[in-house]
Picture 1 (tube, rainbow, N blue to C red):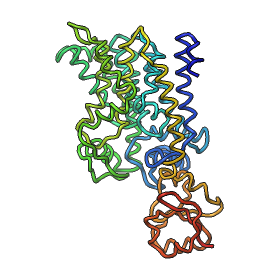
Picture 2 (cartoon, rainbow, N blue to C red):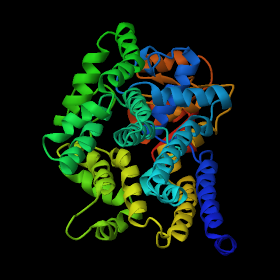
Picture 3 (tube, rainbow, N blue to C red):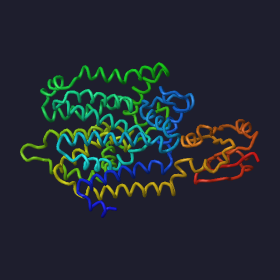
Picture 4 (tube, helix red, strand yellow):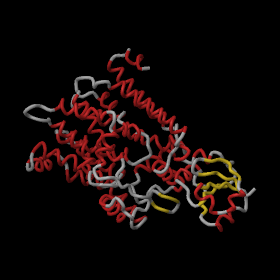
Length: 464
């Protein structure tokens, strides 16, 4: 395949590689199940949104509102279900489209600065964290789409294309509906240092008011985003207190925050976000030192675009340096900045080994899909276990169930937490999913027949 692509012209070759990279990721969306906890949780929330018809407040479970994130990512996956039915492809496809949107925005921006849009798109698409997230049911790609539009809009507006300023505020709206006020902080940590670095401590603030439609832009942003926040608070009082104070302050300053309603916090060593970036941005993070060396101009340092890309790339790292409650995907909003930095360093030239590395990354994602299906999938998702049932019989979980069990049973798998509930269920034959560590809770389980088993749990047929 590589030899055939090399027979094309350089432009055709690069375009062919980009199409191949995106197509591989698109096809892979349907090849592995939703796994607990993140993808299965958000996939189940989208299924619940469609089933209940409640498009205002995402649901954590029937009758339980989810206050942890705004609804944009749930709207996206729910729209996929409406179009394609309930499947892995349906809930992932809108997030793949969001990734394509990021590539299109970054590519357009690259062309304005005389870079190759296609080479940038290849580089960006095959950055590890971007490639994985391009189709993962998470909040991060929607946030990255909003951040990218905000940053591109700001820079082009700053350079005299005023209408792009409003596009930038639309990008902030997307971020507010994708993950909340964190997008404003990320934007500030990117633009603020760039203004100081480029113009000094006084001049930029006067220029900012003159070049950017701040008042009308903020009004547009609030007009588009604030109604949902107010309606969500009215529908489920307490949302704003939990989301603004809890999720955006207490979670940040306290990695062991006990107020988390939806799981447990992640406690990482402070500064780990930099390690996450170095690994998550592979293979292209290895090119950053050489790119900086190429961009450095003796006597004058970095030029304006280079400083902008560096500040963009570093903004999530600066924000999360002193936070312990972090995940690798938190670096994603800065990845377009890294891609633009590298493409700018090699503008007018071909990025070394770009296409072969990109095709290798695509092969690796397919290998990862195969490995997942051969091993970890049965422990990380209940899809396989539930597929071993006779659909006519009821299915229950003993003491705990997971989001994948709810998604793949269409919300019909019940939860039994006491012997009394178990006795009521035993009025007719039924399936019971039991973790091995809980199997000794009741002697009654010895009367059930093992139907299927993973390393951690068993599917039992009871009542016959």
